[in-house]
Image 1 (tube, one colour):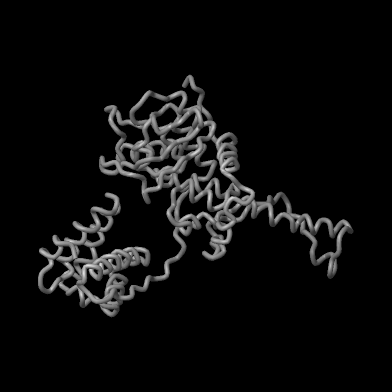
Image 2: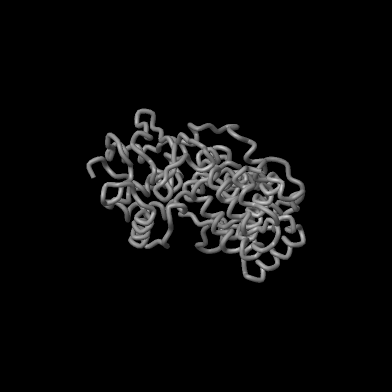
Length: 377
């Protein structure tokens, strides 16, 4: 146990006292500011009110199961409870390392439905960009939609992070509550610029400083960016969304263009590809092409080519009645693949794909669906 902890944790150690020492000596030195805030919030809202007076070495599986039932009664979601359990487990693991308990109790996570997330379609992205033309938010929105950068990374972006010669943006830091640190998961990324974003940056470039600034010339704040984006959404006739939805939109749109999960993971900076599998259930361009071979095969059979078992009417393609048009499947009603199926897709890695293909797909989205702005504007 650290000397500071030994001085603070004397006698029967209660969870309330331990939690304060744990945050000060373990959480704050190791985790990002936003993560620290999340941990402290969970401790204050649920873990300390429930376990505060309990001895650390009395928190066993039965006590944790009782906590789960208490949270369910309180109306907490499975995702919220799992977040609380994860923080509790990490705290108790530290207690074990500090020799405050003999073993860490087994923490069983709840089954959680596939995560739901919002994203803009390519048509909605076009409407948003059109509404933002002529405003100070146009470049920010375009950069978010073309790179998938986090809000903290966009706000911390400097002109010396952008290499216009190679068409690359280097993601080196994030900014949260006026504090700049390495990006989430300590993953530096080097992202290719689409042609429309490259042109916009060339037209706007300055020698140094932040790319996106506030009205006072200082770094753009989260609140200002949030308000500006909401105004643009209203002008476009869209639901109000935040910068994180634009990040989801980037990943969703390139996934639907057929890009594999591994390149998407690298572009997004996910530490675990399981996070990236949320995009695997979207209507993949390659999957749409794959199922079309059935209609082609049936057409060959109907024309007398190829071998068929059974009668022709069993495989015939029926004409659509009246003026009815073929429509693609509704994404909201599709069943996401099992995790192991999504990981099989991810393991394909760069088979038949490389970053040039990724860049080509990004430019395809930008050139065909998004209004460009000339350098004179």
